[in-house]
Length: 138
Image (tube, rainbow, N blue to C red):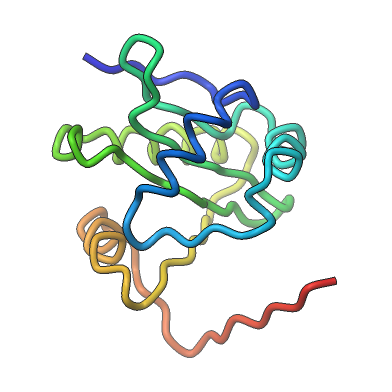
């Protein structure tokens, strides 16, 4: 049986390995250990890991800007999928957002990420159209 606990930077090595092995997940410089440490510090108690013993089998990064929540890097080890782990990770982060007065949350999924798109659609999230995402490195 798995348990959920708050994510800390001590979880980074296992988390990044899970992310690297997750089909459809794209990593960048923003996923470096210092960047993730900064994210966790800016959004305390909002990100979670699912563990069996000491092994991380699921992750979620979550934070907010004071108005809207944002979810990143929901991943579950394929050997443990189908046990509602992803749903429980998401629910934990959404509950934390709600406790801080954040009532709407966004996430981004690549168009060709079939597993991710199926997960979010099945979980009741609505795909938005008419929104373009612009990015720029500083």
